[in-house]
Image 1 (cartoon, rainbow over the protein chains, first blue to last red):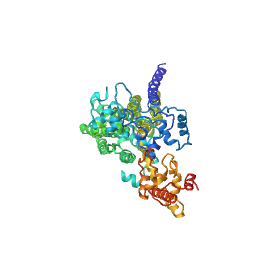
Image 2: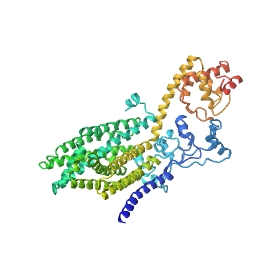
Image 3: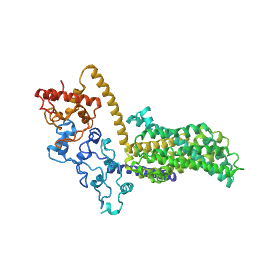
Image 4: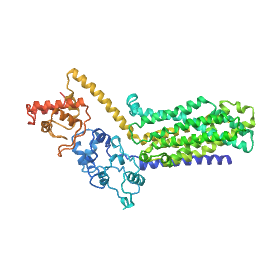
Length: 172
Length: 450
């Protein structure tokens, strides 16, 4: 009897750790993994092979808080003629014909968003390269978040570049 | 490393995969051996100290057997302990070639420490017979060698683990910052506990299965060794899942994929099997499953090394893709040069073929598509300026989107420019900046293949 209880306890001890690691894996799979997008858009082709500038699609990055997601019209300015026979462009064309936006899934997010003020405009004006925060998009078949976007990341970069680190700069 | 990459082996995606495999093999050869050296030295020091305080012949005998088994073979020390170390900076140096901020320089730092630590431990082993007269010297040598070895592996593991977190690279300006990180600390504690675990398993394997000379004639000593080694191995085996979990918990999100989580879970599962086998062996009062227990500990090391290498590769996935793209581009350039030469020899037109294949995605001679009709624009170009534009296009006309780089080689761009200008000249009768080309020409261009 004691032997059986001991064996169960040993099994329970190791099983607990296995469950905890798998739970971390489940959290990563549901919250942190690169999201699947409604259209399999490739930065690898548009930025990596065609060398399009980021601002060509993300037009408001140097003018606004938000970098901006390109409109379907923007995509169609080329894809009304280019690669029209591929399944992904046909999906895009359907959104265009239905007069609906593409429901892209958000990739980059700040985990605790309350009271945090971030603007793309100021960072681009200061000469921060897009890949510093967003990684090598030219090599990403599917976009993923490569930087934590946590306070330590922001403060380290501000300190390294002699940018202000007062609380009120980011926390309004 | 540039020299290695450019002149000996051209880095590509496949090449990087091979380097990852070699890194796992190197760790599999090296780390279990070093773990056994660290574990056996620490146990021998403790046994010698205990024997010195309260004399016990079993303690002294086991310390001698342990040192003879794990520190007695100079060839093993050289092949398993020293040589693989020199492979690591080369492997990581090539992997992170052309990544300016990667802290690979720290990987070289602990090598002298490891070599020095192993040499001191050889001296420590040789002073065992005189420990009664020179106790302080013997213990001092062992402690010094052990501390140097542990310190060196703290630095080595830290520098390797830090490659998994590119976000923090620019902060790693000195050794203290490199070492002060929870992720690194949990990994190092995992390694130390695995070291004691595998040492216990190795004592059982080498003294009961490999050769039982040391334990065959003395049942009391054999029972002492079996209980001592099993107890040590079991105790540290129980600690491993905790450090495995903490290491996974503190690793950055970018290192993970489904395989890494399965590897981390696999480590705990193998530890559970080891624990049950050790408990069974202790209950039976005999050294059972010793080869399986030792093999399972080796599997723990393989899984741990595979996790680390895969985590490093996941965190730097884009670097691998960029290198692969560069490699493919160079290959395509070479092939294009060969094709251009062959086409020139056979009299066919590379310019026309390339124009039809690449440029016609967006351009026609006389109609607007994605880009402007070429007839409106070619008049303002010479061959040289057109080649320069094709190789490095910029936005010219606000009415059209910027032209993406078509990725042509110099030879292809020159051939396309020549084809476009000759076609334009033919259509306009040679007038610079002239009228639109003839309808026949536009039909020819739109038709594509002739």
